Amino acid sequence: MNRLRTIHADAVLAFGPFHYYVQRRLILHGERPLRVGSRALEILHLLLEHAGSVVSKKTILARVWPTTVVEEINLRVHIAALRRVLADGKGGQRYIANIPQRGYSFVADVKLSEAAEAAPAGPSGGALHNLPGRLSPIIGRDAIVDELVRKMPARRLLTLVGPGGMGKTTVALRVAELVLPHYQDGVYFIDLSGLADPALVAAKVASTLGLALPGEGAWCGLDRYLLDRHLLLVLDNCEHLIESCAALVEGLLMRAPRVAILATSREPLLTEGECVQRLAALSIPTPLSTTEVALACSAVRLFVARVAAYRPGFVLREQDVAVVTAICRRLDGMPLALELAAAQVEVLGLRGLLGQLEHCLQLLIHGRRTAAPRHQSLRALLDWSYALLSPLEQTVLQRLAVFKVALSLDKAASFIACKQVDEAQVFEAITQLVAKSWLSVALIDSVVHYRLLNTSRAYALEKLGASDEYRQIQQRYARHRNMRVIQGHKLP
Image (cartoon, rainbow, N blue to C red; front, side):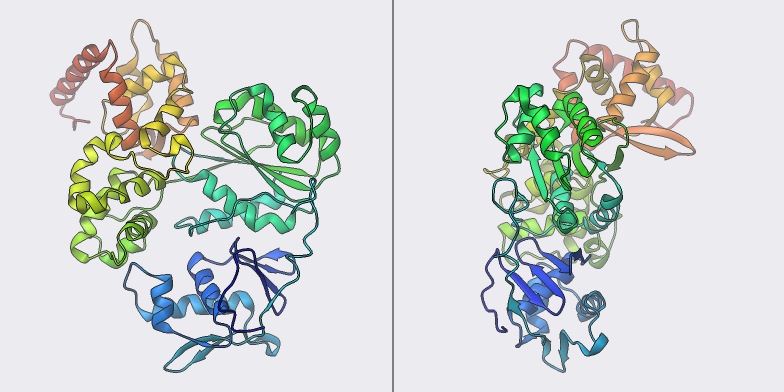
């Protein structure tokens, strides 16, 4: 059935040996998910909406690149990628035709598949997953998603680790969508962020699976239920329940040999067989980049797309590239911070926003009302993460915050250590701050250095300013600066 002018969100479209799941933006070849970039997928979606008709190049460019001006070569590259994935032309089967001087047309027969109606039942009689529908495209995460999709079938425990606001949940959900066909008994998403009692982690997993088990009996019930099941559990936001999550994960993997777990956390679970994948920030262009180079960086693309959602018609102009690059750099390429900042452009403008980012904790406060409370402002997110640190870790973090640049471990320890905190304790605290994604690590002249993200540093400086040792640390830092000047070193 062609000419599908309206495609329902839960539709499954079939063409050739392929099934396209509209809501999940997922293409299966048989039971195998295909790796398709987000822009190529958006082109396919548009062509399927108008299957049998010609879609002009102008229409495609406006749909897929709504906020930027791109050359037609970009479109041809993505069309070629789609044709490769679909094996267009092999065996005489054609899918996408180029109509000279007009555009492109999806020429294969497209019909609504019965797969949606015939989906097998899960533990509660529903579908074999509880993954939420995605409402907006994912920007800049294709590479990490592809890498995780390749790893998942061979790994039983993979933990996605990174600072709050980096998009761990978004990436985990996209991976879960793509690997869903691999797990015979389904994929289940368990959000632990609202759970305060560590003793109820097993009961939370059981209830998500549709098992009516009391808290004290959840362990045994899960063991029995999962023994022969082939499924994936996505445990989201493990950091505040880390010990209970680690115990649950290790126990389930030992007792249920066909279960796999994808976890998200600010720190690794540290269990046997764990594969840790750290989620990096979005890419940021170098200063003085051209518009084309800037838009090739994911931080800029996300920021521009989110600004355009508030100001339709917004495009990145050459004269604004330096300002947008500076905004992305000031916010460390953090997706949540960029989204919160984009909401302020309508009021402040780009240059006004950059000028106010020195006060980013006060500025970035208007998130989605439907988001989790800690994701509605940058301060709330940092409060959540800071509360999980030990008193020693909080102290070391505050003292490190006086430095704008990265420090080696020896220099950090010599500055922070005092009568109350010896160097061994400093080393341990820094190790934990790295594990908990507060400090990033860089290799400079073959020596490991540590630094705080700009947003984390601003927060830690606030905490230091409110502490009893603020004056003492400032005086110590002033002596440190003077000593560096005397020795002829560049000031940090």
